Image (cartoon, rainbow, N blue to C red; front, side, top):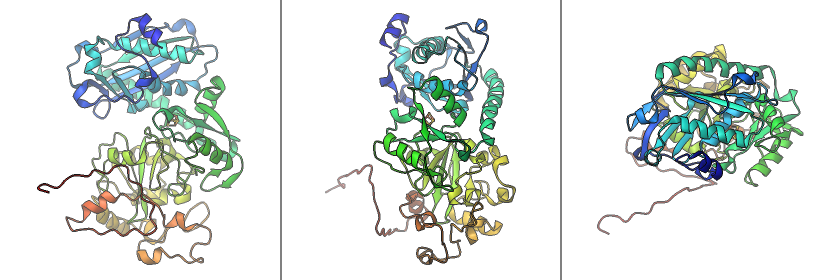
Length: 488
Ligand code: SF4
């Protein structure tokens, strides 16, 4: 890779060591895509190799030199690829690598995927001579061709003209949707293999990413079909099959093969994962998830907010960014879960916890976006920030609409009641009788060890001192700051 930059005379280094490099606001020359401007990345397969101008990069819209320092711009990266071994299924696979390869570029931060991309160019990179997005495009094409030799020709069209990005984004969204629709008819029980993805282990080393027909990758960019295509064309790459093995829990989605993969991929940190469970042995979450879910212990229900949501705060008083900080890092965090948006359409969506019947709050823009995934009887029972502002108003809303959590959630798949209902005092709920819940372990109903978003409890009390008594608690502390008191 060092040879590539020297050869091409790029004014930046290309090296995997820059993966994870952050461009902070103070050192930001320009921001592309992200929260405030539209953006997307897309790879398209062109079967006629004559139509692909290898190595060519076209730019539509202002280039780096014409951008105002500190400003935001729209950004689209559209790549066209061809090659004997390439098939349409590989488009999404190649597209997902754009994040990895662009992260090798010094002074250029690339985050997220599809229409969520967020790029920053650093002032240092511009000072060193980065003048044009064409240089970025050329370097990216070089990396793609060096790392994925099955790509015979590749050209790129980068767009920073906002109207043009908006227009092409509509087409891109249709393509993403067509890809996503493919897996809807296929289920976990129809296949013998799932697929692992280790791409995010560079920054989340214990992340165990398992892609199954009923569970799209949490980044939303890899379906089971995409992963299978990737494993076939690049057997030494990040996507390898996981033989399902014995089904241990068909409702939670626990398989012996996945558990073995969990041990192997997490370096022994985790030994079991349930693909369709929120509270018990949940899937790990790296930093790329499209949506973050959070358990609301006071109401025994689950809320969801997505990356890019315009909603400032959830009812637990935290925005997406703070929740994401609790979810990410490749950890199995009970009480939080990162998912891909398409998982809302899965017939096994958090099946172990009661599925949609357990969902009590969603950001309104997310609820609108996945409206057709929500069962008709739940549509008016899930609150948004337009209905409620905090836990208490959410409780009132749930009572008013007679949400299933009020009297206890009964799982549709097997008729088992998985929550006690809000009318039951907390003390009573903590001591279930065998008759009450014959088939569900205590952990699934009153989740011992759930990582409760304490911040909301601390801020909700209006300044009264709060005493928290934890019994048999497993406490992990990320950081302790010790400060000397004034005058001591
Ligand atoms: S989130 Fe999972 S599937 Fe997506 S790139 Fe990361 S490891 Fe791969």
